[in-house]
Image 1 (tube, rainbow, N blue to C red):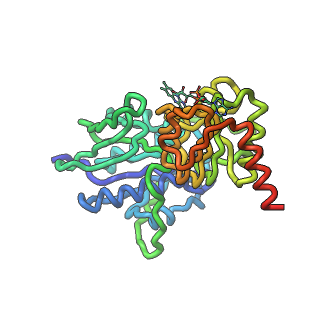
Image 2 (cartoon, protein in one colour; image 1 turned 45 degrees about the vertical axis):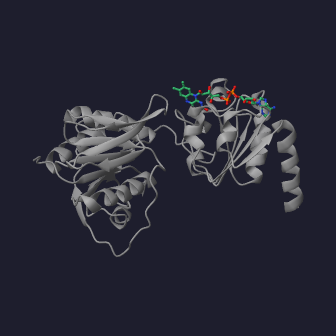
Image 3 (cartoon, rainbow, N blue to C red; image 1 turned 30 degrees about the vertical axis):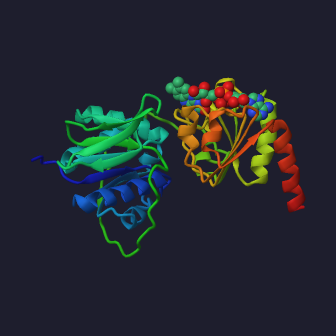
Length: 326
Ligand SMILES: Cc1cc2nc3c(=O)[nH]c(=O)nc-3n(C[C@H](O)[C@H](O)[C@H](O)COP(=O)(O)OP(=O)(O)OC[C@H]3O[C@@H](n4cnc5c(N)ncnc54)[C@H](O)[C@@H]3O)c2cc1C
């Protein structure tokens, strides 16, 4: 029997607003605890106005809130030196962290300090008959799903945003808030010189993605896809090859090593449908594929497949859309 008990979700916040991946992870924790009753806890480092109540409403029975403006700085070392002692005190069996850019940088530092394992980018989690966490993630470029168990405690995993459904808040839920004083051993190591507000839509949140691949001949032609995306209230997306070619920033890459998207509509233009691309978009509600090659693998997952040149088809669709809205 291990002395480690309970599930801790480490919630990321920005200016008090909790990242939705933390809510998704709490929803999953509630599901895991249904058959294996254990306490669900959240750990959040943030200013006074941090939405702690939102964590309780998504299932946290206890929230450890390390309060401080200092946590508005994306400094993994300050986070780590506050989280590690607390985890040593709580001794949770499971620690879950969202695989955001910050989470991906923070999680291994915590795992190393606790001398435990970490499974990155899980797509599912289960509890086996011995009560151990089964961390499921694609391996060998999505050809197999690896089931990983950790021998050491706590069992730590990062999970990508939008892998699990977002639970509805239940306002009747009650939880205990435990305030903790932050600990800062050194002066700020990170200084914010300028905050740049991103203009582009977050591709993971988009309802419509109009994506282009190597069938798009140059960077300028992405303007046509952008116009189409805007007409549909969405954003552009891209295969890795066009990102590597410098046509589109990495923020728009869809796939195994890019973003995972689940929009209502995904239009793939000049994308062959390599497994690594499909991994990022196959769960879209409706997929329209436009490709000149009738044997392109993208057609195997498309709801509507159009064999043809996107340079002809997209402008025609755009014209029709504009006629409708005018
Ligand atoms: C470890 C690893 C990770 C990877 N991660 C990713 C990832 O995250 N995302 C990703 O996308 N890829 C990823 N890849 C790369 C992936 O294997 C493919 O190389 C890539 O997806 C191919 O991009 P594409 O479909 O744009 O190009 P291609 O495979 O070259 O396909 C271009 C398609 O355009 C069609 N076409 C050409 N002209 C037109 C036209 N005018 N109109 C319509 N159709 C046209 C062609 O028929 C063809 O099917 C990864 C690879 C590895 C090994």
